[in-house]
Image (cartoon, rainbow, N blue to C red; front, side, top):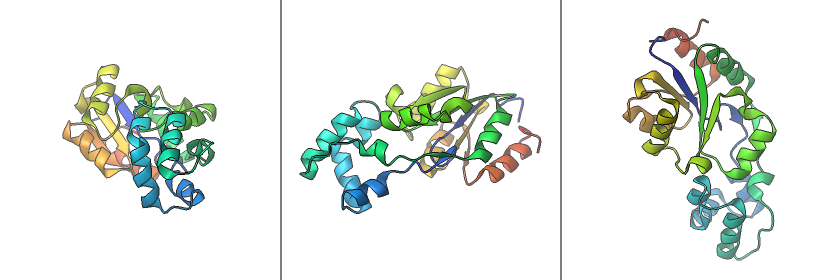
Length: 198
């Protein structure tokens, strides 16, 4: 198996970093429950901000109009507190000795910039961010875009994500996948595939 694999794609939130979900703290800050916030956010352009069609500023302008109260600050940035998972970082560093390892992430400009400033992306050979490429998981086109850019075939690629919908979508186009639980389980899987030595 190891001789066939050449590309590894890692999700960021929940795999490389913890503390990336901002929905609950923002909802709480606004006096809403999670579902109420998400309903308003979708109307304000939650999908559009993730594929780079609108900026965070435009999103909050839309949100303010629907919400009936002006939101002057970028709450996406304010409540975003990502923390690296050192065990995942070590795993990626080991993989990069032999393979190309990239990030495939659904994100927005505010979060991308914070990850960038904190050096979180330094562990990757390249980052494919939804707001920059105009595609997002679980769209199959998201994965096909990365494969084309990396000149890799699906069967030469291994994808790691903590969301079942994304894993299912990648698997449907014959990418080898795993649903991330923790770095130790992932390491065991990669050892069994003879990708890593234990």
